[in-house]
Amino acid sequence: MTETAAYALDGKRVYVAGHRGMVGSAILRRLERESCEVLVASRAQVDLRRQADVEAWMAAHRPQAVFVPAATVGGILANDQRPAEFLYDNLMIEANLIHAAWRAGVEKLLFLGSSCIYPKLAPQPMSEEALLTGPLEPTNQWYAVAKIAGIKLCQAYRRQYGCDFISAMPTNLYGPGDNFDLQSSHVLPALIAKMHAAREAGAASVTLWGTGTPKREFLHVDDCADALVHLMKTYSEEDHINVGSGSDLSIRALAELVRDVVGYRGEIVTDPSKPDGAPRKLMDVSRLTARGWKARIPLDEGVREVYRWYCDHLPAAAGR
Image (cartoon, rainbow, N blue to C red; front, side):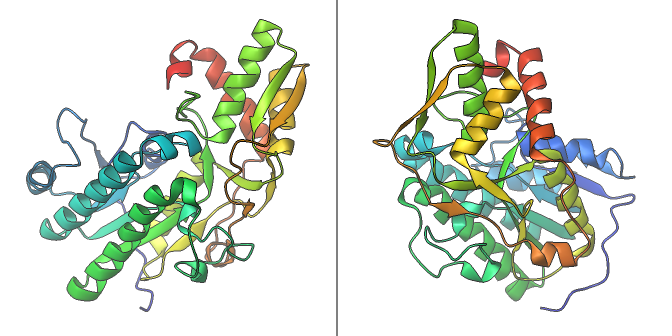
């Protein structure tokens, strides 16, 4: 589908679904620089898994633009232990929001996916064309299937109803407000929590899941929010578009970076009996770069900022 004219947020009612999450709150911060009216709804007001609730709220508030970062998320352990929850919740959330947006006449919607939509052994860096070209990583296939369905929903509503619904696929995100609970967190916040606890306890070592050799890409959530607003304004195509930093590093190197930031002096050991996940996940961000956007927050600077946030919010952060 050909690209349409730029979409202006000035004067618009903009709904951020999942505004209390890490990505949603970052979008709120970014929208403070726009001349728009931001709409939010708490879980007590709207259960996004309930179609009637979502349609009633949309009909009452009539947003003109919608961001959909709302999701049930977690790391390898959480995905493995709660597959039904990850599949059901995310299917319901995205289906209800996209369908209700169409019924309410929303002008533009941006659905947020995840890099886990790509095959486990996708060619690196992963281009948008890699979608559905091979088997998914088994440890997070439930979440991935739901996110793929969200992309296809946006495409279907574009084709059948002419809706200006687009999808963006971010890489691994981190930032203030992240989940630091070791039972459900992703690797970067988990490493921050582990290294901090080990330093405080004077522990001799910290153990990494897996071999430490898989490579991952990381993007600060404020960079991601800026990219999403940029895409909301300038992108209008059926194909999803990758959002990332364009560089990666091994989990071992990430652990060493976090160790240095935290000031932990112990040893880093690996546990090869635990799953590694995909061997590498680097996004091809050439399409996004060609549209005039690049990440600006270096990883070391971003990790230092997040560690300061973590320390400032203890003990509450440890339970997130």
